[in-house]
Image 1: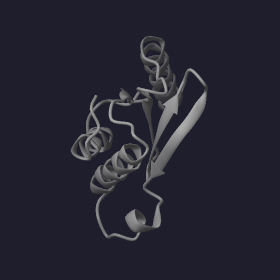
Image 2: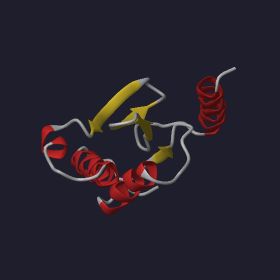
Image 3: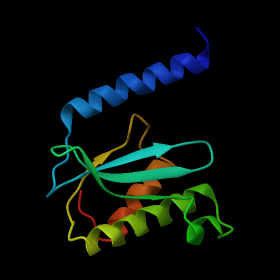
Image 4: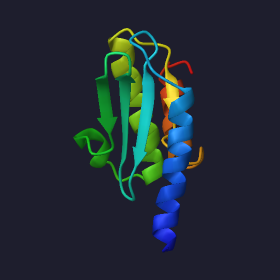
Length: 120
């Protein structure tokens, strides 16, 4: 097996283990993170009703147009997601790191969301 396949299998195993323990509701949605090589995406999900409440990514014009690093973009995504969530009346969330290690861009997104006023 190639290293890439092993890496993806390991991430999916970790992801399934995390998802078996946490779930989002309308009052306390799940903040799901997906990280690609160049972008980062975040969604607030209500697992009870199987609905995405809102989403934000580093592809938004006001974030992608700035000449900043990927980590700084991740922090901006977290801040914008927190602003959108607070506008919808959401303050408490559950964080789902999606099988990624909690450092770098994933941690920056979480820190930005906390700075924006989300509690988790």
